[in-house]
Length: 465
Image (tube, rainbow, N blue to C red; front, top):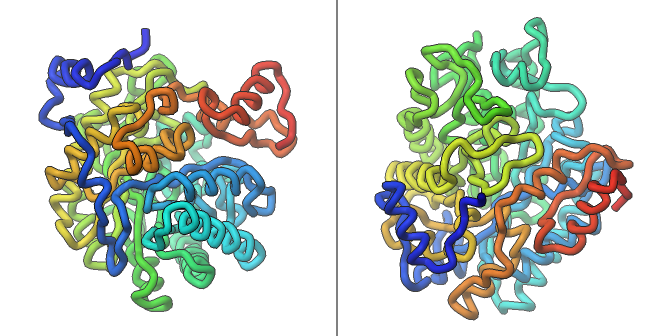
């Protein structure tokens, strides 16, 4: 039976109260504050709605945007949200999570520049607005690199899931120092081609996120919080030194990793104290301990970061934490908790980070898509309470790229356009049975292009797009 059975907002409110979550999940009757301008660093956005960085797994094998990439961002540009956060883009070809992930280099920069210019032009033509903020997420996929995993330390559960042997080499301090060059070079390129901000990605257990949890690692990048944050800190400092204050610094930050889960939906066996996660209670990693994430968020502000996108979980190991769902992904499990518990966890963590950084950084909230047509009501309540600055959607944007436009023009979202949280987009993303060894991803229930791709998948074909 699906979790989401709420036809009216009152039905959802009653469920929230029944689950004892009304302290974290509240709703507003009307959407007002989200439609007003919001400041990020030295820039102003004309509304407080946006799009999370959502990979389409549809680039060329050289890392350039394809026709499907262009289509996705054109839909975002015309969708109304003032924050357009371009997807995870590798700083090195070997740092990609799949063969079709975007990659920023001298060879691909002009292609990304053209896409960015198209986004700005379309938004201006539709809304008459220049006050949008476009940024690029820079990443290295670490242990999830598709060709050769790069690990910062051995995590027994995650190693088991990826079949990484105990003697597999750990990236050295010297190699990490060289990798910093790639991030700085990519950030400079992003600034040169016109992006307003760069996101140094620290989420979902990719390399920089893994470093935050590297408590068992030796050397200057492991052990203490100071050491575990050293890589990101030095990258941010170097970007600021080499680019200046014009480029806004941002990060999408995992504030809670959580333990890995089995296919049964139960946590994998873990040691106590649990030393393999960031933001985890070492005595019980199913519980958050936000003391280190809060300390790091405050330090990020001191380093000049002005935009923090709060996230959590590992899509490969505990997907219910990062994206509460009605139906699990193909490589997942039935949700071990009501998805509203996951939504509340997101809201609580985001509020804690917002309280910690105050007005020194804008904070973007996550975890809204499960709420379907009621997500803006929840976001509005969080905004009014000072618990978030910008509400963005990820899966929801693939399903409903013009959600913000409908809110701006009609004051509500349409029930027949919302994300259903059935994880078909993840099923496409996990599929490698394709001539380019990676199936593109999008919303199967709402977008006919991806509905047809899904039908091909079901029929056992992976035709080229």
